[in-house]
Image (cartoon, rainbow, N blue to C red; front, side, top):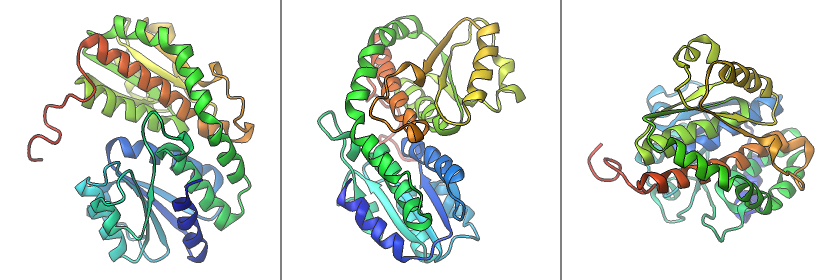
Length: 321
């Protein structure tokens, strides 16, 4: 576990906290969905809320005060809305803990406690942002409520890198086939629920919309039958994620219907991957990290097939917005 995480947990232990706000934008928000799910499932005393950074500031939640913990994330630490959210939270007396890749970033400068994570092919996965968020959230639960899963999370994350590598090796051929079959698609939906929904959201808005300019939307498996399923026909592509958490029945139900009436269905099921080394009690929370690694590979192969690098942008960082 990173020393920065432990330092943050040491401070959290000393504060009287009864609520936590998860605040970020874009890809960083995907970390927060699973975190909120963890808090909803595991906490008996701490309320959890999830906000997009700019909405957090403009909404100005009445419950935001000195008993609040605000956890923020921005990879480069330069997202203006997230920097402002950290500053705003401190003005309200909240304890701020921010995750970033850059220790000298603007977000680092305005946050009380900064966790600098690693990133890249040679990094220790247990020190990358998805793992760090799980360690921080379960550390919070252990510190404030005596939750006993913290050590299982830490040890499981330390074993995760070879699991991810094997999952990517297993699905490489499928990823290439996906790229070849779907490279000309104008729209691709991604569906999930529970702990996996943040990964579907990340894949839809970041990998497909931002990086590939493909129309997309993250469908919630629980909301599917309350409107979205009407767009389904034999030509609509849907990527269905199936996880290992308590909401899997929602994903199974949506998949059964989609396969009954659709033909262009891509299924990524966490049960298909070898999770040896991940404690059984926390597999539902860690499965999204495996699915994310696989989806990233799907996106990389799609980018290659479309001759549209993931680094390509039309507006982001290029024009005023």
